[in-house]
Image (cartoon, rainbow, N blue to C red):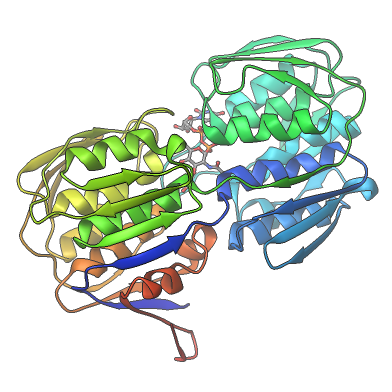
Length: 423
Ligand code: EPU
């Protein structure tokens, strides 16, 4: 598997352009199943997870074509209601096809995704929602088997706000008969982006971005052409990188409004941030101040930025407490950061991070996307060489990360499986 090799110690400088959001693109691409006809998506990030969802949609009968960052999907040929284990296991977001398949075909057989490195990640709330819309659900041989006549609108309360659960049930409810009210839903920008796309297709979705979404079902939807919103987590990762390396980095093509809590936290650490309309400029300072963080559903501090922020705190002036409140096992990066000299103690869902003066390069690896990104960040400031192994996870969610860092003067290279050097 490819590796990323970094020689630390360079203050990053220059401008980086942010790609389209992975977590917005995935449900939006799946929503193509709700229409007959060709949908066109621009600003689609070129990522492993995007290829995986494309493969799954093609398996279900859609015609999928990609050219650079443009993807077209035509689901007129949708004829298969089975999402097999081999495709779902590659990416949990595959479960998002459940709602659209039941809405369009009246049935679906979707492999249960199973747990993953960061937690058990059950899908009980997705199933509860689809059942409330009138589908009957059975769990057989590791698969969810759902069947329904015409789905009917319902009043559904989610025990906890779930991003994927909200998206799945929104996509089912747009073609259900009558009104659906979804309560205590996720408010992430990716939910608003999906609701905008559904409305552009002719759906009737109100309230996305608040905790109650109301949907009035329509008979059919039309294909659309849409641009994917910028990736707020990629932008946040570069923001931390600029502050951490005491650099001067301009982050363009981003949406600062989606990043208010990330910006707020970085400012608490002393970083200087200029907020533009679609750009951010971050300048690092000599002394990084410690700041506590609790991950929360949006608009709180995102769990997807917790690992990266922890690296900043690992070299801050005092002690900080970082609590992970979304996933039960999202401290995978801590043992690798220890190997680079970080002083971090975990107790339950809280990490106590005592800032140290220096991190040291080491061979490291992680089994989660954001944990892997945090190791790249650590490598950027470590003394000597850091080798981040198992780049597979990074390629799932960061487009050309080594090229983007290299363009900011980082000494970073990808070493291919066959030993070839890139970057
Ligand atoms: N949960 C349940 N039951 C459910 C669904 C969720 O108990 O039926 C729990 C989860 O176990 C978790 C919490 O609810 O403890 C929140 O999970 P959520 O459903 O919101 O997460 P998700 O939809 O599976 C998305 C992102 C994640 C991101 C989380 C939280 C996508 C494709 N994935 O996952 O992104 O961490 O929301 O913001 O949108 C990443 O990009 O690295 C990533 C993991």
